[in-house]
Image (cartoon, rainbow, N blue to C red; front, side, top):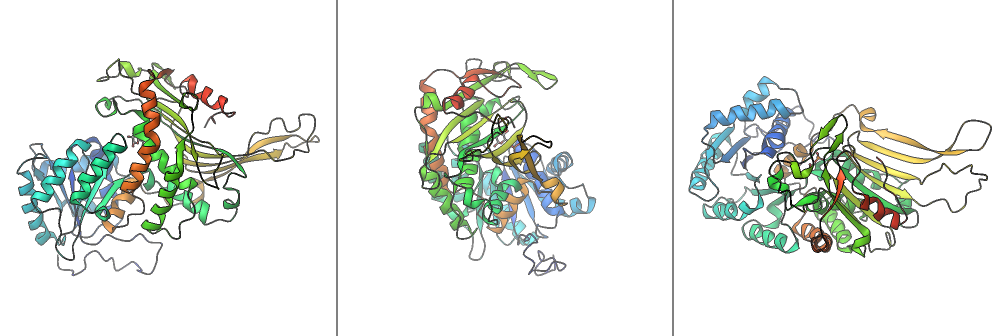
Amino acid sequence: MTDSAPWVNPLRNAADKRLPRIAGPAGMVIFGVTGDLAFKKLLPAIYDLASRGLLPAGFTLVGYGRRDWDTADFCDYFRSAVEAGARTRFNHDVWEHLSQGIEFVQGSFDDEGFDRLSARLAELDKARGTGGNWAYYLSVPPEFFSNICHQLERVGMANSAEGSWRRFIIEKPFGHDQESARELNEIVNAVFPESAVFRIDHYLGKETVQNIMALRFANQIFEPMWNAHYIDHVQITMAEDIGLGGRAGYYDGIGAARDVIQNHLLQLLALVAMEEPSSFAPEALRAEKVKVLRATQPVYPLSKTTARGQYTAGWQGSEYVKGLREEDGFDPASTTETYAACTLKVNSRRWGGVPFYLRTGKRLGRRVTEIALVFKAAPNQPFVDGEADALGQNAVVIRVQPDEGVTMRFGSKVPGSTMEVRDVNMDFTYAEAFTEESPEAYERLILDALLDESSLFPTNEEVELSWSILDPIIDYWHKNGAPEDYQAGTWGPPSADKMMRRQGHSWRRP
Ligand code: BG6
């Protein structure tokens, strides 16, 4: 490497803020690199960043794991992950360049492997110009966090020399309740200051989720209606059609509420309900989210405002799929829920009296994540004789995935000589409006972590507050029997519909 500033692309106009910034000299160590997440998401995302020219020339990726591999084995594995999962087309030159910076260091999470790792990183700093800047990505179950933190500290890898940095990137679950999250945060923060900790919630890396902020704060038309005067209730849905095949080890004992509501759905709620931040700088944005989470509580009694279920065998489209109890590795007596729904309220002037319904589930009718703001009826309807009977409630629906976009639903006159009003949709879809493809969530988040851009990463406080909202619900469930069955391919257990009916509403069929 001869260039003194190899990460600067001379073809870019540095003043053009629309171009993504390129990471400065850095390397990354992935712990748990042989796991599913690394194969499906992290390694392809790193390749995609390289192919978009957003990584520094000397970028170095070190895989650390127990497998008896050398660097050539790891390179083959990396390449198959890229071929299977990268968003951008495989390009031989990009790969050649990237693969020069790929390394594998063998070791476990509690042995002298860390001494070897530390020595190797020092060599790589010299050879590849990584400048002592290392991000440690923990793609491992949380029970290993403590050992890894201690080992990194022991061998001096947690501290950086003046002018360089060390960052700690972690994946959920961040504990299983508020207390365990606090303990985990203490372990991590004892070694890495909070400013160096990047907690991944991959939903925040999704284009449509970031669009919530653009929609709300770049426009004038939505914000005046974005409150309890106009909004009747909010529905946040994350439905999946997949089951748990192969993930029993992680999921059994965790369940849908901990897996998805505690993180993804509460983050969506925070972005929808927060006040306008003074800027999108990390402190400003996170402060607004914290205020909302602090004001959010379950609606009681939980027997009437929550629901949970477990999928049984059924037709998922044209395929007949197994029930949870038949899935490999799942204890048939397990009471882990695969569907969870709850009703929350946000105690603020803006949202007083507006229920926020959150639901998520596996093996539901189809894969869809959306946020629907459902409006109150117009105060007066000057229609007669059923002219407006087919009119539902107006809604703004933010479709997070698939078919990313925003829909406004409102009433319109049916063509003809009579006055009849019916619901219609006005649609914006990313695919039609833009030619650019959205980057994958992990591309955005990995790049942000390398750039020290922490806006899209939840803080320890957000994580603990989210648990405090959910803990009473999970406690209640554990004391009150088993989840109700629902058939694969349906929209969840009957109690989920009852929960809505009791509150005078019904779930949207997305
Ligand atoms: C993960 C959950 O966080 O999100 C999984 O642990 C879930 O259970 C996944 O399947 C869904 O992510 P996406 O991006 O496909 O909606």
